[in-house]
Image (tube, rainbow, N blue to C red; front, side, top):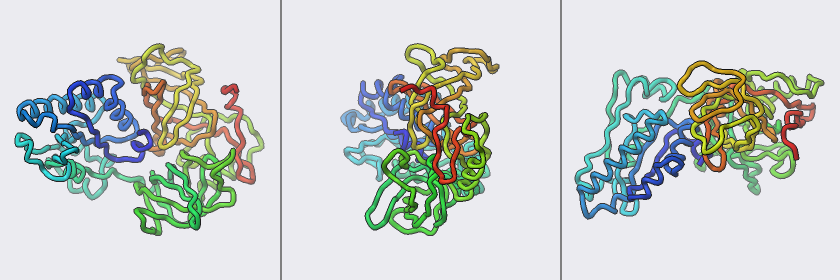
Length: 412
């Protein structure tokens, strides 16, 4: 779920109309609520809601309509609490078993006249839509349709970071006979073409041999494209202690060289001071500072030493909270230092350390690489954004990175 949400632009939320099942899914900790929250934390701001299993009420059209209204109001209220603009969310009653209102309008729901959404100029800002649609929206626009397919066609693509440095989080690595090593994922920013790149946080230099999208070869690919990139390099390994794996990020050649040169020039292997990576790639980190918002806590407040499991872009890893810099209590705007715990509703600036080297970037530089969710016992407890990354790894002349002393917090 976390991986799929991090690679999407629009969320299609399927909820059931079945009595009892819907109520449990929409309650705190329910499946529908958790999936919607994870999608929102991962950066999805546009949603389509499909109310499934409407054929259960086909014997009574009035009861069918009332149930649809009840379910749609509850789902929209839940999305509104997350921060979604519900005026732009189409809600469609469907029966996937019968195929009603999925691709074609159904005659079994005569009371349903279609969905209507409103796109305001604020929701169509540069952060949300591409230039072509933004230029065409001078006033508030109304869109309408009937089916789920119509709702998908009404969605607009967000503005891509074309001019930003190349960033490619790898969802999957494959070894294909006769082709080589293939990295699969979505380009978050920049443009890639056959050239030299670096795989971080392993700092492995490779060459892009070919690019494929939807089973067709491409000369280049840009931000937003889901592609398969064939890369070749003598140090590229899929097995072993320094093997590339899911969650690695491929960066551009010039950034990789700059990291290797600046890091190898330092003879010290001690922990450096935290610094903001101003758009430059780094050779991985064991420590980063983030601002988190605590959503809900089942039992005790969060304290220093807590070890949540973090989901950032397509990566997932264990981390330890080693410091609470400040806490802004719920209902206030003034941060307080020297606080030992974080309660539900609080916002806090904290420092995380990881056992293995990971690759994240400040949210201000690359939003999709700077978001993450914190999970305790399979429950999303907080959402966060990376503020700064600490360069705690020294890269030697051969490109291999050495583990920093920050891992001292993890005792075997």
